[in-house]
Every structure is written in C-alpha cells, then in structure tokens.
Image (tube, rainbow, N blue to C red; front, top):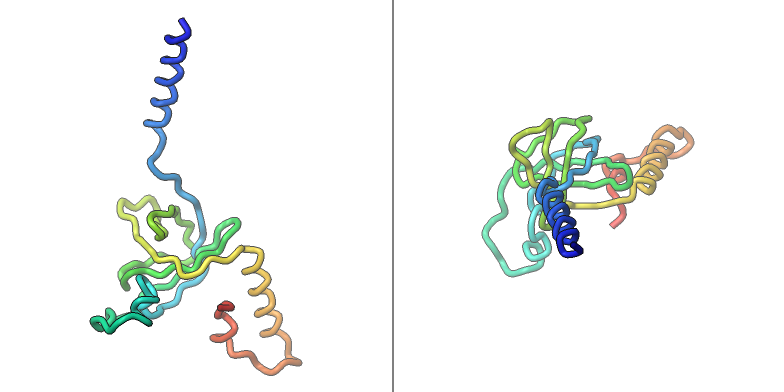
Length: 152
C-alpha cells in the first residue's frame, strides 16, 4: 500500500515537471536605445588585450537599457538586425551568459550580451542626480554623453 502511494506521488510530480514550461520568462521594459560598437558583444577582453585577430565586424550594434522590477540591464545585440521597439514590454530569460528576448510572442528569440547590471534603486538615484544637474542653472552645463555613462 505504501509503495503504491509513493509510486502515485512520484508519478504526479513527474507529470507536473514534464508539463512545466522549459524556461521561465521575466518581464521588462525597454527604456533606452543607442547604437554602439559591436566589439563588446563577445570576448571583449581577449579581443582587446589578446593576440592580434581578424578585424572586428564592422557596423554598429544596438544597445538597450532594459528596466525590470529590481534590476536594470544594459544589453547589446549581436548585429544591427537585433532591434527591439522602445517602451515595449518584453519577455526575457537567461541562457548561457546571455539574455534571450522575445517580443510580442514572436516565434523567434533574439540573443543579447549583457554589458551591465545595476540595481534599479541605484539606477534611479543616478538618473535623478543627472536630471537635477541638468535642471539646475547655478551649475555649469553638463556634458550629457559623459553623464549617462556609469561608473567603471
């Protein structure tokens, strides 16, 4: 009797695990986009400091700021074809050190390299500080291209 009950419990758990989706998606909103250098996408350290290699791929790659509940990600596409609309709520998941993004239940997913990760609370403080400096007339004008870069 106990073995039958145990077998039923194992069978139920196996059926639930089999029915579960293969990967759980998280949600985020794309709040910023800019075109940047494709060199950071993969193996940037080896490309920069390693032995000479073939010339890097030409062209610009899209760089997005993805805002979630707790974390802000800066992600870089592998090519200029990896485009995501601004102010779009996207589903994403992590896969092998990359962020895989699906837009509007699209059949195809796009893979992005993660350039930066910041806590949302820290990111909001930085954004507020930048906005305050831009709106304060007593300070000299701030170069916004430098102000938007994060600390390294």
